[in-house]
Image 1 (cartoon, rainbow, N blue to C red):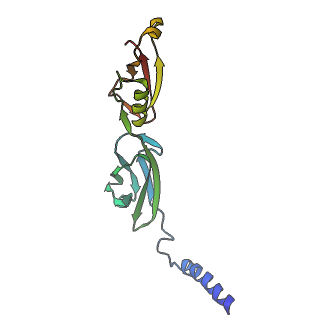
Image 2 (image 1 turned 90 degrees about the vertical axis):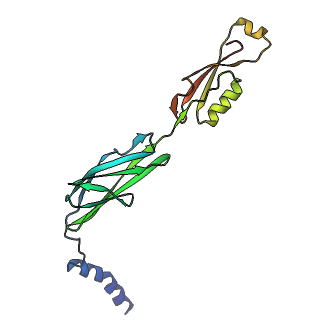
Image 3 (image 1 turned 60 degrees about the horizontal axis):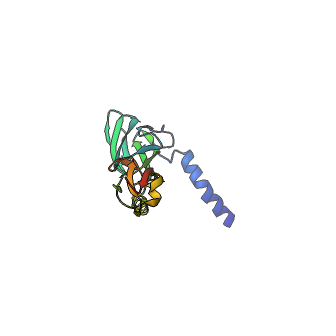
Length: 180
């Protein structure tokens, strides 16, 4: 009797599907494509506009679980991004078709303003740049008389200039000397 029960449990879904029990089994899928952004796109903004095409034209589209604006077979939605990798799922459905789903990955990289570390010590400059998420490439400059001067070296110049926006992890060149 136990085998008969297992056989019935396994056969029931097949019988329902064969008799047309699944309402979407014989329907074609919705055609869905994302035109922008491309998969793996790198952005710096906090939002990205997701757009694409869908068929049939009356299909509804959800982007990250929220309805997208649809018009004549096109859709668009503004999506907020967090820092780092973001996976944006897009799903489309229509009464006359099976639903379709796709996803794109977007990398949001936050840019940092280079702090002004000129005039400070090389150690302080390195620490401030690293706390800001940047790398310091410190180069000592000066002449033969620098060894005779009783002062400590200080930061004379940085490149790129203070206030410049750079990607996190970028390198800032720091020039130090006892006399700037």
